[in-house]
Length: 311
Image (cartoon, rainbow, N blue to C red; front, side):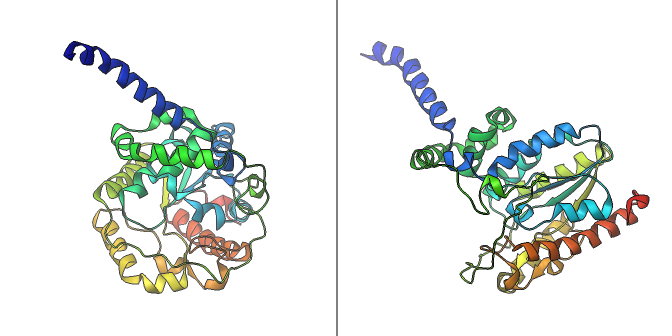
């Protein structure tokens, strides 16, 4: 009996691994037709611009829904690639997927959402949904620690993929049709009065600050300019979480990677937000981008970069 069990162990392990791989690689039809397609489109755009200096926006959906890249391009005259899709893919993969296509002279506009849990670094089932659907080759970029953290989400991802198996192409701000040539969401999205307020933690996991430091070191070592800014955040949630945000600001400063503008600068009235504290209406995105351009010009002038491109 014991010999039989010993012989059966490899078969059991193989079977479990096979089932997990099948579940992991299940394509999600919601993601297939959604703005999450931008993860792959942004990679292709960066590849096309690999020999051109550019601005690369790295963030979650606060970057996709709340930035007008066309205004940045028109103002600075530098090509812009907005890679943003969803904070749920985690900061690590937001950077690792694209870093090989970011080179000397490029500018990284790094604007992660608030939050300090491990999921902000490694992601959630959203990462499986987007990678399996749009870029499964990127799984090779996950670290062992990330795999161990994410393993529990494989079943959740598979269940969601089953639920969405009949999903067809759709319209709206969350559809692939909402994406413009820069990677922004460019679709009518009026303010909703039912925006749910966020509860933030004032303490960031040390692994997150370590990875933020890594991005800064990588940029310096490769002669890339990094502009590290706070995300846009709805006024009502900002007031509610001001102490937590102050704590995040201090923690980043203590780790030698301070924001290059105060968070209050990116706090706007509730009426300029669409459906979450990070997703703005088009007019809100335009207003936030005007502030963003001012900060970009200030930071680039201070670094004595590309003064001739300013208009």
